[in-house]
Amino acid sequence: MKLNSLRFEAFWIVAIALLVGLTLAANQNTQYALFGVLGTYLYWIFRVLIEAAFFVTALFAVEKFLSHLLPTWASYAVAILLSLIPFTLAITALDIIVGLPEMGLNNDTTQPASRSGAFALELFYQLDNHIVLGCLLLIPRVLLQISQPPEPDREAEIATPNDGSVRLRFLDSLEPPLDGSICCIEAQEHYILVTTNTESRLVLHRFSDAVKQMPSALGMQVHRSHWVAHEAVKGVIVEGQSMKLKLASDKEVPVSRTFRKVVESKFGQLCP
Image (cartoon, rainbow, N blue to C red; front, top):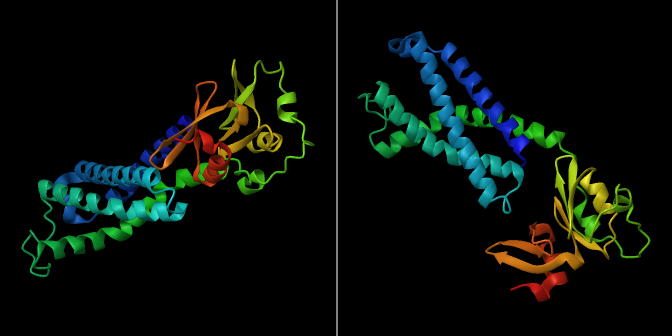
């Protein structure tokens, strides 16, 4: 995700958390009277910001380590459930500190006898509100995904025949002409970063359209945002489950799981 998108998402996550905190504070009963009006608002704002922080941290962790195993909606659901546990622990500690005992410490005989039972009950109590907040915090990300151009049909692009009938219309349209041999092109928002062995140039163009105009004899798409020229590939870097291509321009380009088999069949002799 690009820097502008991260700033947009971070701004609205904080804004949504603050609005939720203010809304909850405005609807509290006399249980929080000991805090006063200002204290009640500060308590709920702080509480919701903590909850949002745990959710965002869990979401980034899930997307980093489990995105290749889970569909998008499942990643969101897992992040919500994972963040519920540390949030409940943190908010229980906070309530005890400020004088609102939880988990049966207020000598309420209706509470479960064991600490584990009390904690499970507390998780259940927090679950519905936590799901709602998680869904609200995902709104900026969903809006960003809707506003981004659709991804190219990657399978169709892999199968593009090499019949030599497709001209380099994208490269031919560049003025002035590129200096040097093409190495790679990279999607950057609504622009494309074109890199040769002697220069780099940012061009306003749709990445999927540019890829479709590049013959398979010249190069191939290796990632949703990257296309590389065959002649530019000088090595293959494998680190655990990740794969990168080392180019003649000393640039390293990531290879996604979708294109990994095709890359291995093409550059197998370069693999370590």
